[in-house]
Image (tube, rainbow, N blue to C red; front, side):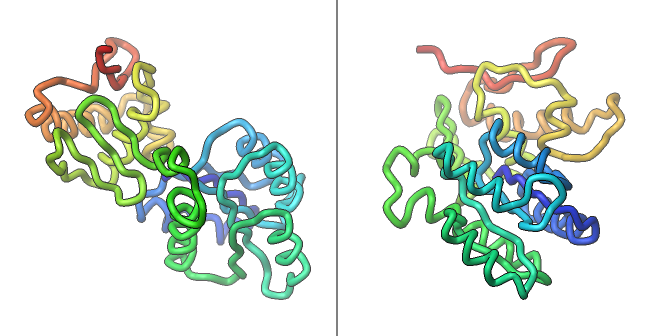
Length: 233
């Protein structure tokens, strides 16, 4: 899942980001509300983890404007234990949940899965909203909640990194992604531009999927990067 995480305390930010990535999340991080507001408004996320007290636009401002614009992305607020009024205001503004500091990353992960499940398939979600959880291209199906991939109804066992890369490409069939774009969104680290980790991961995915599908779905674009092919109509 693709998460936006907005938190200005570096100690908390570092351990939360590491914990979320270990659990297979792709994390976009901001340490201030101004940048967080722009990302929240311009990008599609599966969930947003948002500290209330941050420099620039605060968390409640961001939440209020998300809901005002009709953006229903699940939002979990991070609060201090004594911020009862802020928690109540946040819930009244449309927050899906809150978690008080200090907290365990495992608890946050469980809360994220819970609010995403509610938004996708439980508590009155429409069939269209539920289907947003399932990516289908040709014979491939990728379930973003169960993290299961099937090809021609056969389960394909992928590592966390392979799953995240495949999901990233399948979200936009036909779009070419550079290696640096893939590194930033799937690995979220500052790698040497000459690293071959993307190519190695792509090869592993191909070896698992191509023999089952009989078709090479991930196409190399010479000198640029990779794209997931659109099925022929």
